[in-house]
Each structure stands twice: as structure tokens, then as C-alpha cells.
Length: 149
Image (cartoon, rainbow, N blue to C red; front, side, top):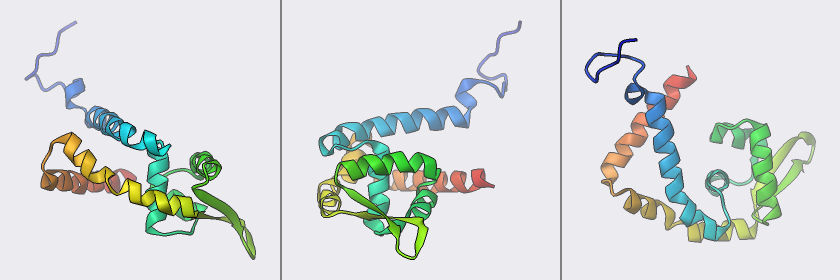
């Protein structure tokens, strides 16, 4: 079996895979969040839910799932844990029992003040210039849009 060399154009080389670079980058960046979120009692997915709710609360479960690009079945256990922690409240919408409204509690709103330090801490931990990170975010937004077809 022939071996692949770095310049041979092998499209199946691991170091040429966008999926591999994205997976490793995502794992590594999320790991940077862990020591910042653990003292707040949050996981990274829970933090993302709170970010969306800090932008607008209350929100329907469906709206929140779309915003976070999560299946409602994946989102529901996250919300149950946040509710058990006293950070969110889930209630059926009066007049539309099929719709679940998710809102922040006072404790959920109060946690926002502690979370305001997280973005700067992540930029600092990455050690990359902010304009470079903003450009990366723009490119990733394009990748997300393209992958949705």
C-alpha cells in the first residue's frame, strides 16, 4: 500500500479536513470556558441557553431551539437542569397549551452580571487579537449558513 506524503494532494489526509479542524477547535475553546463556568454552576450548553435568554426573555421553547440550533428534545433536559438550579422558569402559554414559554428568574438575571467577564477572559486565554477572532466568527457564520443549505 503506498504511503501518502505531505505534498501528494491526498484529500483524505486528516490535516486537510475542515471537520477535524472545527472539531478540535470547538473542543479546545469550550474547554477554556469550563473553569469560568464551573464556579457559576453552569455547563457550556447551559451558558448558551442563558446567553439567548439574556437577549430576550421569555421565549418559546421552539424559538429558543431555533436560535441555539438545537433539537427541542436536546434543549428540554438543559432547561430542566436550569430550572432545578432556579435560573429559569418554564410554563405553558395561557391559551396555547402546546407552547412552552421559558423565562429567566431573578437569579437567572442576576447571573448575567457575573457572566459579563467571560468574553474578555476567553479573548485573553486565547491570546489572539480581537479583530482576528471577529473575522473568524464571520467566516464561521458563513460556514454555518452554507452547511444549512
